[in-house]
Image 1: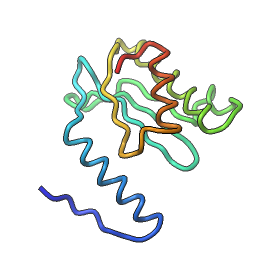
Image 2: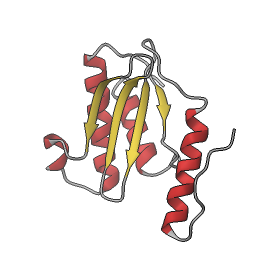
Image 3: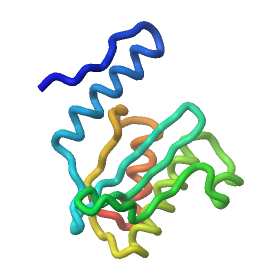
Length: 127
């Protein structure tokens, strides 16, 4: 089945390409109660992560660059992503989640996305 994403130029083309990649990933990746989906949303300014049970349609844990403990932190955006990854892993473990399925949201697994994933793994979340 074809998904209609309009082809554009410049930055709009990059966004539409990321949307196509995200649709392609979401066909294969789904969160269950035993292994929910860790969704990463990256913008130019910050990064957000959520742990979602797709079958129930509930968000179990979330963290963002706008949280108080992360917002006042020092460092670049990769350091912020590491703090968000550690925070979402901590909140997910508090909610009883031990393992997740990683959804990079159509972004390349590099830079801030990789920093968030590595920090979540170090905090004890299994992928």
